[in-house]
Amino acid sequence: MDLKLHQCFVAVDDHDKALHFYVEVLGLEVRNDVSFEGMRWVTVGSPLQPDVNIVLEPPGANPDFSPADREAMARLLAKGVLRGVIFTTSDCDALHARVREAGCDVLQEPTDQPYGVRDCAFRDPAGNMLRFMERPG
Image (cartoon, rainbow, N blue to C red):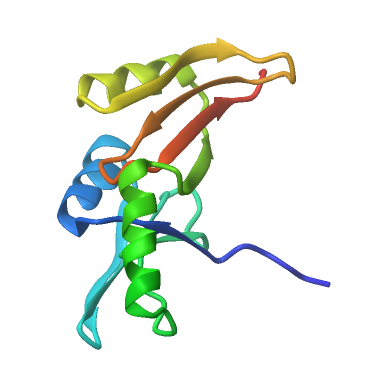
């Protein structure tokens, strides 16, 4: 079986703030930014992984959600309890310095973990937790 990840979804409450963070701070590239049926379809990704996209979408983007579901998702996003993405990097400390300098909410300073990676964690502008891990060289 030939199975590869193509897209993952991250809930955001403000596309412009999210784009600034993911593109200007993290260095991802915009792959798509179009209006679609009253919504905005935005994808970003690493230049090193042209076939993997992160879709930045409103927390209630699912067309099958009821108004109550959309409100519940927005509340969960505002609390910062929705999961984000784990990135790998060749230099966790440099990435940490760059993201911290941009004023992002630090959740964890670079730390050597007992399971063999060095990692750190931040919140994106919408409150999603993002982890950045460096594998030993």
